[in-house]
Length: 424
Image (cartoon, rainbow, N blue to C red; front, side, top):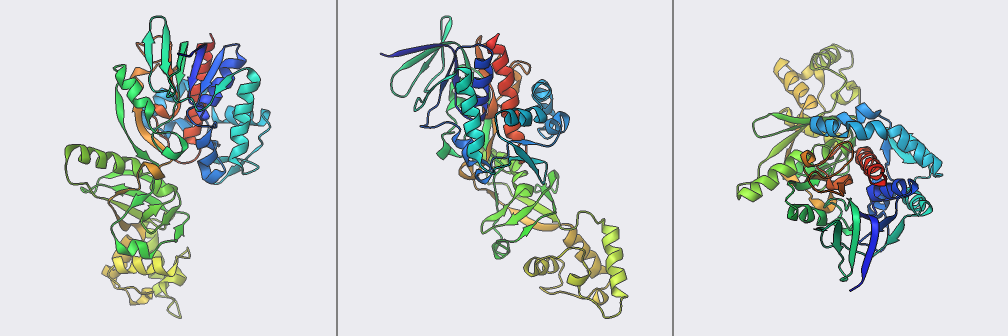
């Protein structure tokens, strides 16, 4: 039986694996990268519509806060060592110029994700890292002083230290099929149930399908459960689709929906329902909007609602707003509204209700929520507690940020810590 040995093995040649390989090898470590697919960085190539939103314009603190309280605390050291600006500078050094885009995004100036992937792989190879492709790992076992990693084809890889970054379970066609969760569970480590995240939401309402193709660029989306408790809010673009809602504003709020559905399925309970409320005029308070309508009612010529609003709402969307307000599918004139109708119209514009009954699942998810519990990983080194020589970084960890380059940023930053520690 063939046996391959290397002091350091990195499992997975995605964003985290490629970054870790370059950093560890550049520090003088002997590095072997195992990748289950025929090429490196497949998910990098597919990200951002093949443009690759590789980091954010936010500073380390601002980026960390978007991972929630526990995530921000865990990432504090990683983002201090490798903040977004350092990631951007690294790519500039590798010949990938970047540019800023709306919503705090950073893209390669070329608009080509392949340039990002190629730069990462080129850097790792130039530093001395070796790659073995089509090398799917099927297990992770401690064998005396080494780690033993059996491969699909029967070969065995042995190493002193292993950095495990095989990704999550999203975009399975790119090779991230959630293999790593079982490896850690067999080692007795806790896994927070993986669910699809940053994924489009589904709606049972026929009228939502009628609005398919309409995008609202500046809207605040609020996710509410059946008790009307607000579970989250994001001010980002929202897109109506044939199946429900997409766009960053909706997808950023998908985690609680996916997690609640997974819990209900596990307990064999009826799936829960949610509501997305869309504030179509987030810059106007209710009082300001009410005053706007009252002022318009006194104008000469009796303008219609569509001419009064400070934004140009598509006709189909405006009709849905007035329908929810009980005014029918019309473009009413503010001077025809009594106090009660005006109140309902204000509430509809500030909270258009979209029923939500699920997500499109892992096949359409940008990342996975859940993974190796952060309590079992040292935040300053990415060492897995209680397992000498074992590290975890990237999407396999229970870390999820919103759309906008945050998850690549976390992958690079955690990979840098792991690389530095193994190279010591």
